[in-house]
Length: 189
Ligand code: 5GP
Image 1 (cartoon, rainbow, N blue to C red):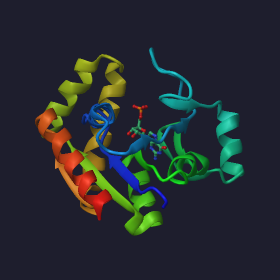
Image 2: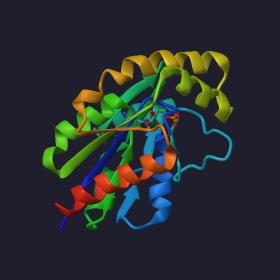
Image 3: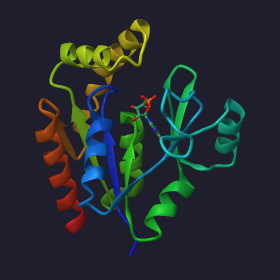
């Protein structure tokens, strides 16, 4: 049997990656992380083929031309991210479920494509102020980048009603449990 698709979307800095990593580490759900392709540069500690497939602009455009993506988005100006068809099939063809960490537009698009075979979960920050504080706390982005992300988050939150489930991340452990339970119910269906 083919694996199912689990879509996790959120404005950046809402703890989405932390939640996904916590669930993968717990290891009680049969699911593998879908490694996206991007043309952005690796951050410190990020590895090619682990966090992302880091492509040059040319390689990314080539993948678009070859219709290699399920979906792709220009998430920030000039910075593209996309889910590769062969990445999804690599995991689901073996019967494993796949978990996608993608932006809200990508999340809505993938849900439309896969319908009942996919569940889409939106992680919502408790407030915009809290989100700004978290982005500042993680110390990976410049002041301009943080303002850009906060502005974008306000827009992205308007997509929440298009998702199957919304989980507010006001307390990390609670959010991890809630997302995990939602995934388990979906897989068992
Ligand atoms: P970051 O640069 O912080 O790793 O990611 C920025 C944003 O790109 C995050 O919201 C992340 O979910 C999104 N993203 C990562 N991979 C994909 C993808 O394959 N498709 C889409 N549409 N967005 C992605």
